[in-house]
Image 1 (cartoon, helix red, strand yellow):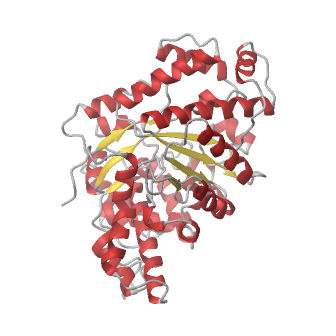
Image 2: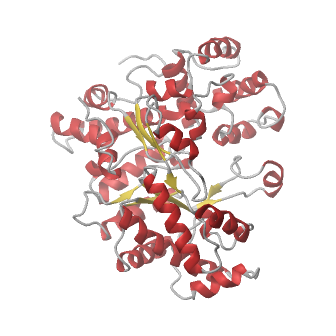
Image 3: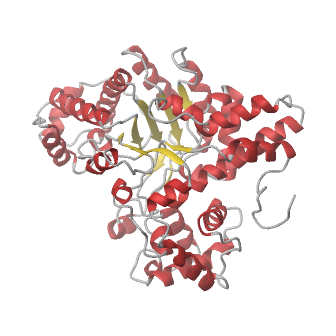
Amino acid sequence: MSNAFMHQDFLLTTTIARTLYHTHAKPMPIIDYHCHIDPRQIAEDHVFRDLTEAWLGGDHYKWRVMRANGVEERFITGDASPYEKFEAWANTLPGLIGNPLYHWTHLELQRYFGISEPLTPETCQNIWERANAQLSGLSVREIIRRSKVKALCTTDDPAGDLRWHQTLRDDPDSPCLVLPAFRPDRTLNIDKPGFTDYLKTLGKAAGVPIDSLDALKTALNKRLTFFVEMGCKAADHGLDYMMCEANGNADAIFKKALSGEAVSLKEAEAFKTHLLCFLAQRYREEGIVMQLHFGAARNNNPIAFQTLGPDTGFDAIWGAPNTGAALGALLGRMESQGGLPKTILYSLNPTDNAQIAAMIGCFQTAEHKGKIQHGSAWWFNDSKTGMTEQIVNLANHSVLAHFIGMLTDSRSFLSYTRHEYFRRILCDMLGSWVEQGEYPRDMAYLGQVVKDISYHNAVRYLGLENNLEPLR
């Protein structure tokens, strides 16, 4: 095995791992079933001005470590020139030993620009010039095609008009399926500023004045129907923490909020529980996959929030108490009220891994193999360690072969290499288990498992078989 930096066998420590990756994982296309990219950029085939726009614009992963490296904010989100910001990133990168950003950065340089040397202060100018020279031929559609993306699901507010999804659906040259995902967080956030103002926006989009809980449900039904017509296959909910509050009159609580009165924490939880259960029923009826993301402590730095706004790198992990009990109660309530849809569970707190992996076993049915999923390592956890721990817990408690694999959860078109990173880690783990005598050396079966986790399982789970051409 070569000792070169991030060589072709990077992270693949056994012969079996190398065979599994190069023969089975590497050729597979990508289904990116949860991301935050802008469909308008795909529709307009955006071309990035420079590597700073492509790499550092909106990437709070990089912003956080640049701050930790003592970089002034003007070189991160401020008025510094694009090259000055790139130079600040190059000065930060060598210190990121053990950080996945180090690996992601160099995978992106290798795969999209053919640049194999490390990015350092010394190589900064040269890499800047070489990469920028290639950007004119690397539009977002070209990136998607080169990455072998067959389908991606964006994250969309129910009040959105989905105009860019419509444009792409009607475009014969669209590089892949670009599907909306239903994200009604603002509808649930009855305890947060702007709730009643948002209801007016949602009501206008649905053509329904929202003056009661029934009217809210009617508006959500109309918007969900529209999303399904536009190809929606998944919904997503970003919850601060897992809750299930059975006591409370959701209609009375909603009217209280509409009148401008503040609702208590318990009242907010009761309303959210009621609406989540209602939506879960609708997702099941429409064949929509429900995703629940929880465990994020958001906007912890009030000065930074006031200055820069949300999603700028000031979120962290929330270790909420009684997560397992609340999760079980919520899923049980949904199951008893009409049955769970296909459901993917993600916690930002890695100590919840075993808890989730065990919980999904309580609600599996014969409707679909792996109907309830332990979602891939998310956000602060999509490192080598985080991915390994998630896979180990899933394997320990469930059927790893039915896992639907990796997603980017990203705003960057260059981040598809995270799928490669995940696949290398998966293949190395499987290879190690075989080498250690923990599993037979059945390469045909193992190869199929790798292909399924990399691609086929997600296609089947999202019901995309009729939307995509079969692989040759």
